[in-house]
Amino acid sequence: MEQLHRVMVSAFSDYVIQMEMPLADFERMITTRGFDPELSWVAVEDEQLVGFWFIGKQAAYPGAVYAVSTGTVPDARGKGIASKLFAKVEEHALKAGYGKIQLEVITSNTAAVKAYEKLGFATERHFQCFSLQKTAFSERSTTAQPVIASWSKLEPLASELWQKPPSWQNSAFAVNALGDEATSYKIEQNGKLAAYITFTRKTGSVMQLAVAPEHRGKGFASALLAVAFANVEKEALTFINVDESDETIMQALPKLGAIKTLQQYEMHRPLQTVAEHVEENDLTTS
Image 1 (cartoon, rainbow, N blue to C red):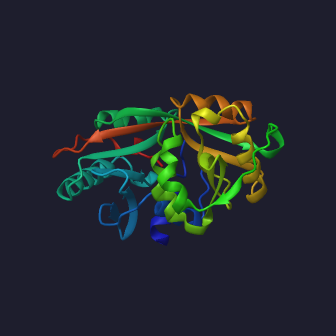
Image 2 (cartoon, one colour; image 1 turned 30 degrees about the vertical axis):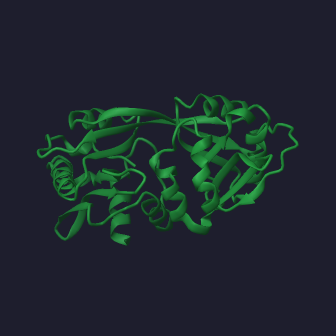
């Protein structure tokens, strides 16, 4: 695991945004994203890892695999490493019965976007990321009282509240993979689930936040975020990969004081028997 962490840190040393990922965070990331070593590939030169395609899977996406992270270390670029690795990923994922691969890439990383498009990836969803500082949080008055909830009991009901499904790294699989690191609170009205939030106490990442349509505009989201702030170790809550087409959350977060931090594309590609070559120095994603 330490070798995989080191090669990723090296590959992202000149990324479009500064990345700091300690080993514990790396392990958390690949676990929650369904990392499968049997589907993943690395490149080795002079007994050193120089490139990788870390691939994940989860039951919520049958027939699909996910690029948890891809990259090539700077000194090894220009040798076709990434395209060769992708060809191996594709070949073996097809043999394992998968028909599609998906990933996210930061929209400002135009070189990577173009490279993935050349490989046949097409944009399926547009994501926004937000940060909500505790000092900027505009809490609304409400009589709602959130109570702690068991995710195992929330999970079967959660999708009824969604306007759009969560991204891969915020899925039910990811919540379950975090175990006790993930905390959920809910608000009920007349014995029925009206709103809920799931977040990580250590990182302050809000993985899911939803309010039933008939209860929107009542301050329930604000009450849930206030509870999250009271239980996290950070001064800000983060929202990674909010679907732009989810009008409810996109309108609510800025009103509550959140600011946009970056944008990502969710890109998909059918798996094929032959992968088109692309320069690996442009292929880096997380």
